[in-house]
Length: 186
Image (cartoon, rainbow, N blue to C red; front, side, top):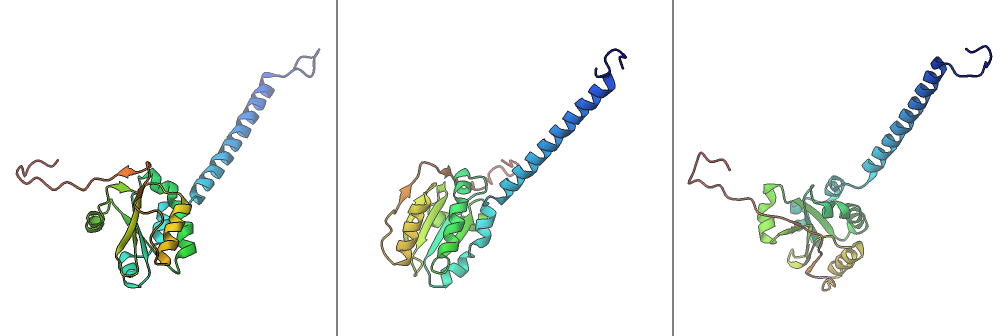
């Protein structure tokens, strides 16, 4: 310390001040990251919507109209609709079946082919007899989906039938293996 100026900082005290500021910044950053991850995890995911959905066999056997959603985890339009679709499922599940089929799962290839899924999200609306009564492709506003669901429940024509949004993700069918060159694994 300087005897003439007892208040002047020493190198040790400026190091302590710097360390204190670094510690405070680290605590604030950690807190921000923690709450950011919490907010991200609380948002509705496609997994949550798929978990709430019925298996297709059960849906086709219970005599209620059905909405089949074809989706993929990588589809940003599918992800953006997840919260709305989950709320629609909760609101209408007593009168309408909701089925989700992941286009990346080859188990659903017959359904992908049958309903000519070439873009996702793709919604197929079935009547009580499991006959197709309409479809939509792409990110569709909640209000339009609700109107279609209500019409299907009331056994009325869908007000928004065969619409296609510009927010779709293309889907291509898996290529058949070329057996002419058995050592070629492409």
